[in-house]
Length: 396
Image (cartoon, rainbow, N blue to C red; front, side):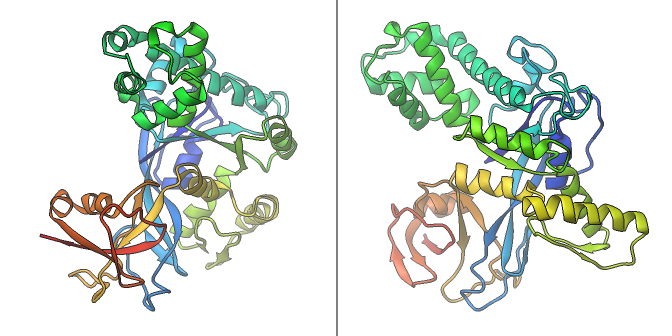
């Protein structure tokens, strides 16, 4: 699973990426600071099962604080997108290619309106962030349309006398950008094209299908960044009113980055997603003023910095992934003494057998049975797992 960070230059993508991963990346107030994509590891929060099992976990990756588990996820920060990217303007071609395998997109928008459509600095409030929301989705939809048109001859050569053959042909043509057969089927049904032969599709049919298949395979969350700046909250409220169906979450990526760096340096106690922090060292007057600003204008108004909330929402609400813990009914620790050392994120329809293959192909191939560690009950191999399940797999 991969989360892509998208948006126009200077909207705060790289700052969001740095705040989520604590990786040192180029951050500057001019367009196209990011040229090559940055890849890193962020985290999502899961209520750990250790408390229910009367123990304290010791993760091999991530951490667990106050029974909240931080589970690693992959993020990619790509070059900024400008209007006309689907025609190659700016870094458009590279930007779009870098997003091929992303499962969900976080669109970082400058909610304060202090950067224009090219990413150039302008007076706060003089650019309408609504235009950024609209143009990016249009560019992505056009990208999908162009890929379909480019592959149309190859798709058309395949057999499509039936709905099933059409779905198979279209999904093969779009597999390079991470589209599945299930997503093709849902998009075709939504557009009422399921029973229509490809040869009979109109150009409008293809455009409607391209839009829907993009929504299915690359859903978007809008990270309304710089939400502490003047006019930002008013802009966020207005965009929500105009587009009530879009997911829009206010955030301040620079505030999250500041707090996480201070925590890493030992100056603060702060965990991503928390609504407060605690000073651990004597701070300078300038540091105190900066932290007071974050506490008053960010944490109090946004119920946190918003960065962690966006990552959690992307994984658990949009993608509907589930956290599954491998465990044993007799022993919760691995051979090195790590208690509940692992937590895996699985797609919504994942079964016990899928989980076995996630652990190792040999475990999946040799699957005998699975046990729900919490209830001690047997789980069938085709049983769909639930969020926060603890599962023991027995195999040959």
